[in-house]
Image 1 (cartoon, rainbow, N blue to C red):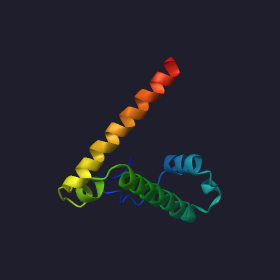
Image 2 (cartoon, rainbow, N blue to C red):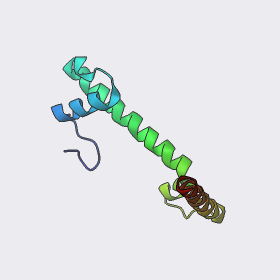
Image 3 (cartoon, helix red, strand yellow):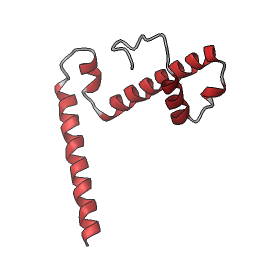
Image 4 (cartoon, rainbow, N blue to C red):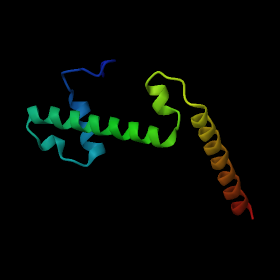
Length: 98
């Protein structure tokens, strides 16, 4: 079980197995000391990917992640993106039904 602060020192066998399964890397082939490094690197890469995806998908994410209120332009961008996605979804449904 992970710590709330993600500062857990002991990485269990299940964590190593999960990281090996999801990365495609042979984490189990490392020596035990290096397995911890490999799992931590995997976690850090995953966190970075999630952060980049959130920045790309949500115009208000950057401001909110720093504890600020988003700029009105970012709120408008978020609403426009939602409307565009809804429009595309409706068009796809019409094509499938036609």
